[in-house]
Length: 335
Image (cartoon, rainbow, N blue to C red; front, top):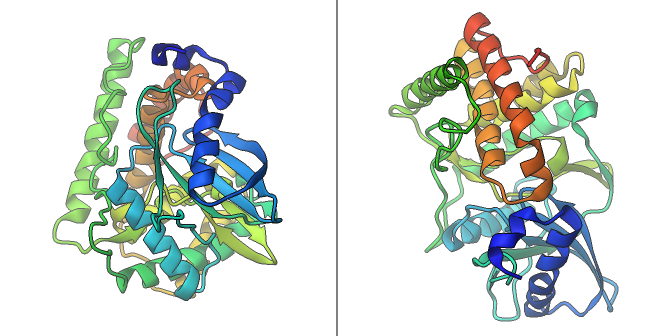
């Protein structure tokens, strides 16, 4: 299969095209595979591996990931440190038989190298965004515990994390030049990007940054043995603690759960003081999540995400217009 064909494949075909690389990576992690089933094919691709000796492992192929080897080293090392000393439930990352945190693979169908990681499997019910009020207090506490731990943690040698000091987190900007936007829509995107960028720059001026998970929402949470567990550290980077809270707030607004945002902040305040950031700046950080998601969708190779891109672009413009006009970011607006 030519790599140019991959974006045009349907979801099932894309997963099967990635499976050989996943199986080879599993061997490098010392896993004797009995069964391998895909559990998520979106930005990245996660397989559940059941081994012949009775273990269950999450194997993650960085299909669209922008993480470098130095980034993955930081992500896995931080996750291991959290598992042993932060008071937050996370999967335990696995090393290869050579002692490495990841495997390099080049799926023939993709035509470019990807990094594959493995971690212990977390049993339990997913904490979906629609149940935000149920998990918001626990996530607030867990977020503060992560921030407290991060402030005292040191990156290991050769490890790096990107700095999240602008709305697209360093990704190339394909949103501003997306095809199909009329001049008014393009102007809305430009204004939204400029306003969000100004807030990032102002808040970061002279401020200390800490490692952030930067993707805390229901899709990355589970109820494991009665406790809220956090997984998927692929988006981790250095930023201001308020950014983690703003990202979660974006998803809580999608759930429409009454009192969820207040519960998130209350849970955080049980552990650490809330970040002292003006409401309008928090709204800009919430809105910046819309910019990041739309940009990522437009730049994705995953079939299901590419199919959503055009409609999501219209939705993005409508949400940005509402925020720019009212000062409040909402998800329930007419596109």
